[in-house]
Length: 415
Ligand code: FE2
Picture 1 (cartoon, protein in one colour):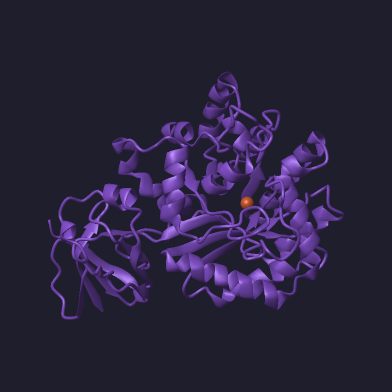
Picture 2 (picture 1 turned 90 degrees about the horizontal axis):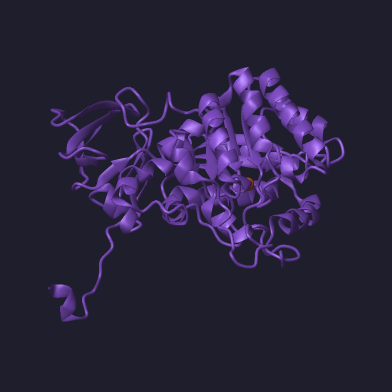
């Protein structure tokens, strides 16, 4: 048993205590009497673990392996990856994916949804990530999306490979309708995605309209189909960059329909501000979806890392406070009211998109999973881009940071 004292919970003015027993939250109260190990959190803020709801673990650390993405566009990224992937082996993918997971975990992430490319005849990456999922399950929860990077219909036997991925155990059905060879095939792919999700009872997460082309409106069809099937809350539309360029009358109509279905949105702010707007001169678009407006409409939106050193994006560490910082700036959401609940974008909103609400969160009876930030309140956490001091999973330390020490060299620090 462990008792954490001087715990500052989000939204609470006074500190509480948390008792952890057998890996679960046993009790959360202002004062708890118990004979056990005591850990003083000194008033630092405690939140549920970070969630990264959109990552590509089969691609991590491949940015420098082949020809570089010279244009910096999404489409050249796909081409560069296609040239590389015939050389993949299960062990090589596993080794990189685990390095990627370790990097995310160091920042306090405990839940990752990773897309896995299934447009490859041997499904090597999916086999590797299924093994990784099993190997890391005691420290991090992985969800795997069967992702047809080169299109369900643009790639030979793409639809059969998707079905095979479902049978192998992928958790979610993915798609990339804006990459199919024509709009009609993009629409056909959306029908196929929903059909597979219903047939195999899986979640949906589609790379949807990741383009500045305002004519790319696959979100509309995806939303309509999942609304009709009643599976909007099991569905995520990732990126939806073109919705950020859509005209206001179209967006107004869509907002009502998106609210009705309960569909979730993932925005990848660092990735899309880098990849999009490449055909613009000036004005140059920001490339992200309508984060602020969707959020204000009561639609679930979360932020994600997307890439770590791959042909689409050369940087990335899995630091969700870094992603949040960029997302809030790019979406123009740094007013005090916006910041008040902003940590939700990289915690509970991501958990909701991953359909984890029943197990995720700091509540008595749930798994004792939480992180401690190096800040006394939400505003400071965001303003200071606070580091993660401690990550606890099922009551056990994943890591605990030593407090940083500064050698004072100047009297200015003494004031
Ligand atoms: Fe992605």
